[in-house]
Length: 215
Image (cartoon, rainbow, N blue to C red; front, side, top):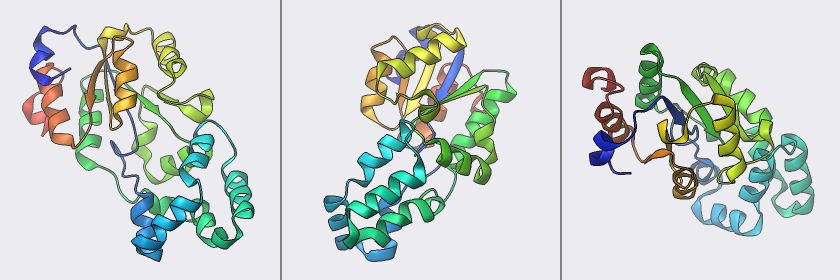
């Protein structure tokens, strides 16, 4: 849905946030580039299915053991693979401050805010300790806790069922087009996240925040 259609859409009863690259940075490539250089990082990611294993962690596989098993399978890269566990916080180096303010402003208005995120159980705990605002949702739907991930239909259905909010009255922001498409197929209103400013404008257009609150 484009911003200029917001006025004709159903009213929004709750806002749903992805976490990685929406509320906090998620930059494993930049981390590895800083350690071993871009060329060697590209070779590592070509040789070793780090992102695939991370998806299994998001589905609920144990964090440390999954990385240790992968390191054992690829001994030439074992040190670099273990960084995924040992240096994980360095891959989420900062909050995206404007989006965090938007979430807090919505809550101050009494508008329910939910998280819907692909996240490992252990890594979510680590992230919450570093970034306490991740504990300030009305409900956080974390893939590892639910044993299913976006864009699978099941995780969206769980949110609908547990919150009781009608799909067309949810506004969901996520940085991945496939996750947005899955939500739209269920009737959710959506915003493909790129930077905070367009999302802030969208919240204003829906009447959820004033321009001052969204700044």
